Length: 302
Ligand SMILES: Nc1ncnc2c1ncn2[C@@H]1O[C@H](COP(=O)(O)OP(=O)(O)OP(=O)(O)O)[C@@H](O)[C@H]1O
Ligand SMILES: [Mg+2]
Image (cartoon, rainbow, N blue to C red; front, side, top):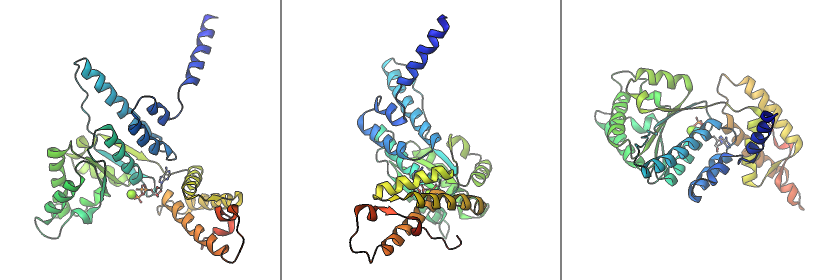
């Protein structure tokens, strides 16, 4: 009998807890940190990324408390590996992480420098080291985001990509506290790259996997993208888009369906189609102007 009462009490307590990550941060963090977190929370899905940042937030608070009590601090390395297919939100999340880190005081500026092989690798001896050093310098205080990092290792020992990796490793050693480095790319290639470069795994302790979005998530992403543009989908447009996404996810999966990026492009195209559809209509209602209808979604092979 007593047990039962305890269970009921426990449940009531759980219900009272704030629901979203942003809520939990809002009650425990200064406004500027909470505002940056709200951007992260606003993204559809991406639970792993949200959870990670919440843990870091909690850890920083704990370090402050430990400091007060003269206890050892938990040192953290924030360099990360983002694994995921195209359009799964890697760059978007990296940009928001930069802002959150800035508000938390981990980074001084929080900006994002996004680079790929061609930005780091030069054409003659010494050129690569110079290019890589310059970019690291630009990224100081912020996030250095290296897309398809494994392409640096592709050319083998003699390739200048190797020089970029060495130079980057050195920068992480010397200035690793002044910026956050994120390596991003396809999951399999990323794992192979880390295995081949023994110095890397220990320097990049945080790994986040960006899963492909489900069709329902893609539709929610469409809704959220349209809401910021003050557009919306009619019920039939939403259904047409849903059917199309189901087909695309099945057909194009091996060839890399580009997830949220695909949705963004589809919406931009529909917005242009809608404008043309309404061009000759004189009296337009607010509803007409805001609504994308099924006929605005046309695909070549559909
Ligand atoms: N969870 C999400 N909620 C809302 N919008 C999203 C979400 N994920 C991605 N987007 C949007 O989709 C687009 C593509 O995302 P992003 O560029 O971050 O993907 P990516 O993983 O970096 O892709 P790529 O590997 O091709 O560079 C952006 O316009 C972004 O704002
Ligand atoms: Mg990207």
